[in-house]
Image (tube, rainbow, N blue to C red; front, side, top):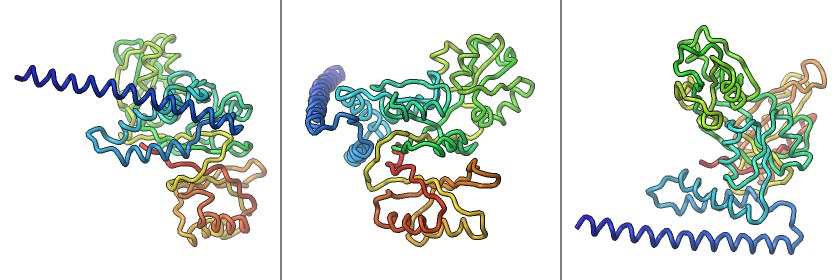
Length: 360
C-alpha cells in the first residue's frame, strides 16, 4: 500500500516537472518576443529594467502560498528571469574581485547566474568599467552592519555621473580557511580589513599571536592562503571551494546578524515601484544650523531618512559633503516638494539615484 502511494506521488511530481519545463520554455519564448518588440521600437541598448523585476518579484511573493518561503521562491524565479533575459541580451556586470568575493555573491543574488560577471581589483575600477561602457552594471559594497560605511565607495560617487540602480543586502558569514590541517599551524591570516574587523573578538580570543594582514579582498586572501605556507584566510565558503582550502572554523564573525549592503551602479534611470529608496549627495556652508536646514525639508514632508553620512569634499580643509538615503522615489509628489526646498538651502544637491528597496 505504501509503495503504491509513493509511486502515485512520484508520478504526480514527474507530471508537474514536465509541465514546469513547458511553462519555463513558454516564458522564455515570450521573453524573446519582448526583445523583438523592443528592438523594433529602437530600444536596443539594455533590456534589463530594475523596476519591472521588482514588480514581478512582489507579485510572485503575493501569490506564494507556501510551503516554500518567499526568499526561496524569489531565488528560483530570479534564475528563471536571469536566463530569459540572457536570451534577449546577456548582461555584463562588474564586481569587486577576484572570483569568490561577497560582492560576486551579491551580483548573482541580484541578477541571477545567467550574466557575464567580470571581476575588477578595486572599487574605482568597477566605477570606470561601467562609466566606459565596458560593463552595463557594477556591484560595490557600501556599508556593513558592524563596521559601517565603505569609504572608497562613497568617495567614488563624488566624481561620477553614474546612478544607483538597486541595492542588495547580504547576510555575511566569515569562515577561517587554510591548507593547514589545524588552527595551531596558522602563522598569518589574510583578509580584507573590514572582515578582519568584523572578526576581531574571535581572532583576539583564538589567534592572539597570529599575524593579521589586510589585502584588497577576501578572495585575494583566499588565493594567498592557497600558496603561502602556514597561512589562512577569512572569506566566504565559495572562496574555499575556488581555491581548494579547508574550512577550519565556521561563522567566526563577532555579530551573528552581520550583513553588508551592496549598491548596483549603472547609467539608467529607474522608474518608481511604490517601495523605493533615494540617495543624494548634498553640501552646505559651514555655518551654525546648516545641517538642520538641510534635514528639515524631509521632516516637513514626512519623509523617513534611513542614512546620513559625512565625507570630506576634497575641496578644502574641513569642507564636508553628506550622503543621504531616504524612503521614496524622486518622482513621488512629497519627495518633489522636499527636494525643491532642499535645493534652495543647499550649496549643492546631487541626485545619485532612486531604486527599488532590497527584497529578500
